[in-house]
Structures are given as structure tokens and as C-alpha cells.
Amino acid sequence: MAEQKGRTRRVGLTDSEVLKSRETHGANVLKTRKKKSFARRFFENLGDPVIRILLVALCVNLFFVFKGGDIAETVGIAISVFLAAFISALSEHGGENAFRRLSNECQNQKYRAVRNGALTPVPIEELVVGDIVLIEAGEKAPADGYVISGKISVDQSAITGESRETTKEPTQKREPSPSSRGTLLRGCTVLSGEAEMEVFAVGDESFLGKISIEVQTDTRESPLKIRLARLAKQISRLGYLAAALVALAFLFNCFVIDSGFAWELVRSKLTDVTYLLQKLLHAFMLGLTVVVVAVPDGYTFYN
Image (cartoon, rainbow, N blue to C red; front, side):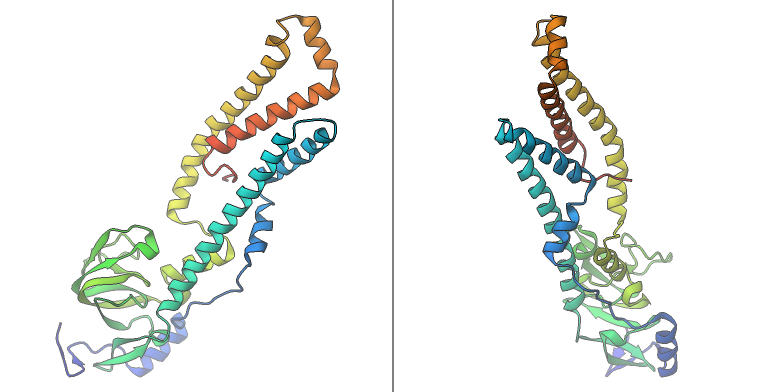
């Protein structure tokens, strides 16, 4: 990498090209939207389909408690509803905070970009698509770019969740993907080495920018989440089948086996409305418990 007294063998963008690129592709700024409070996220999660079912079951159970029913089961349902909504809200809130911290880390920093044939300190928000940026150990990638010279080791865990060290160097095939050996994504930390990168995406169009928007607008569909959803759908079918079998087995035990297969006693139990409703509710809760335990992300229905 030829570099001497701020000069470089590369020409880079001219001032007019920088302005044109910024007009076409936008500035290198991550837009932030109004942050949702933890309380709002908590109450929004109470609208989840399964939690709604649990709330209905809780109300029905309260009715039986006033008629001398078991209060322990009612308390258990209430705790389940609270924990489900609380943990989900905590996860979403923490995820948004993490992305906000990551997007703010590089603010007010300057990077060395090739402009008009010279290495020039440029604030991160002024970098544009087409800029050639020199990046080295200790710095974070200021935008998405392709490595065009040099070789570096980077930590992509802030973006991909994978903690292993990854090598980045020039490649013939350019792919805007975290798995591509020649691609650097905004927010990645350079652990060692030095390289030049050519910026291909800035601001909200960067990989980090898109994830940040999805996190803030609750529409995130990462590749990992899509794969997990497919797997969850397959496992869910078995989970729902198991739940139905458990509920039916419980009812069969209550009405038939406990009656010693005496059909007169079975009929008397079936005509006792209070007893019937209690056992149906209990069977329903058993089945729902199986769904929560057996189905991945049990408090969410995957499409």
C-alpha cells in the first residue's frame, strides 16, 4: 500500500464526485427513531396470541377460585404470563439498546479517505459510496465496503453474533455479505493488519443500518431468524400433536379410568357442569404447557 506524506497511488473521489455520490446514495448517517419504553414493549407483548389465551385461562381460573378452586394453578398462570411478556420485552429492549450503542460508537470519529489523490481525514458522516478508506487495527469499519488491498483480521460479532476472528482480503467476486471474505461491514472491529476498502453502502443502506431499522420498527427478519422459523414450524407440528394427545389422555383418565370404566359414573361426571368445566380447563392448560415447552419460542406463533 503506497503511502507517503499524505499522498497515495490512488486518486479517489474528487470534490464534485463526493457531492454527486452523496446526492445519489445519501449521507453516512444512521437515522434513529423514537425509542420505545420498556413498559410499552411489555404491554405490547401481552397482545401475543398465546399470551392472550393464557389471559383468558387466567380469568376462567379466577372464576373457579371464587368457587373454591385451586389458587396455586391461577398464581402459576399469572406468573407465566408476566414472565413471558417481561422476558420478551427485556430481549427486545436490550437488542435495540445494543444497536444504538454500536451505531453511536463511531460518531465524531475521522477516517483516512483518499480524496483528490491525497489521504484526507474525513468525519464518518461525510464518507460516501465510492470513497476509498484506509483502515487499520483498533478501528471500526465506518461503512460497508470491499477490501481492495491489504489483509486484516476482524471481529464481526457485533453484526453476526459470531465471536470467531475472520480474515478479510481482496477477492475477485464481490458479494455484499458478512460471510464474504472480501466484504467489510460497518461496525466490525479490525483486530490486526491494515487494508484499503472501497465503500459500497452508507448510512441506512449499510448492513448495520438495515438491521437497526428493523430492530427499531420491530420488523427484523434476519437470516438466522428465518432459518429458526422454518425449523420451529416443523417442530411445532409435533408439539401441537403432543399437546392434543396429553389433553385427551388427561380427560380419558379423569372421566373413564378414574371411574373404573363404570359408564354410569362417567355419564354423571359429564353432566356435572362445574366438574366438566374444571377438567376441560385443566386439560387445556396441560396442552398449552406442552406447547410452551415443546414448541420453539413457545409464546410466539411463526407464520
